Length: 193
Image (cartoon, rainbow, N blue to C red; front, side, top):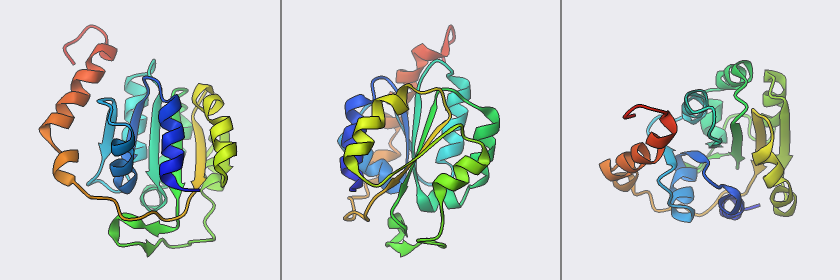
């Protein structure tokens, strides 16, 4: 599968979900679905799942989708156990597995071809875990995954993509941070956010 094809399918079903995207996925996701409800996790490799957990706990009535990278998740495998223990029903965790640190030049991740991210999530205690290596099956199951009681984990087996344009200035801009702040403010209930 290709990551951009998976993301286009997700964009069709996203609704008002907050999407937390890491590194290369963040650049591609923002280009495909430039919503103010995008939270980008760039500059803190490995922390997308932890950021998503915080949002899921803080906004329990809002669906939170995390687009993690395989290299990023390897740097924070403990978050799988923490997420499973916290049990946020509104969290859907996708790891985009292409076997590389794509944001850092395409170097292979440790354990490439041996690591079983779906197995890690299952053993950590995620109640629903899936592997996808075909776009049709992913697209068919996506509405149910997004509606399921979480935490839900899906491993998207994708081929490495072409290098995106890394516009860090845009992703870290005050405009994007303020747009996210304004977009989530109504969900915070009663306060100024």
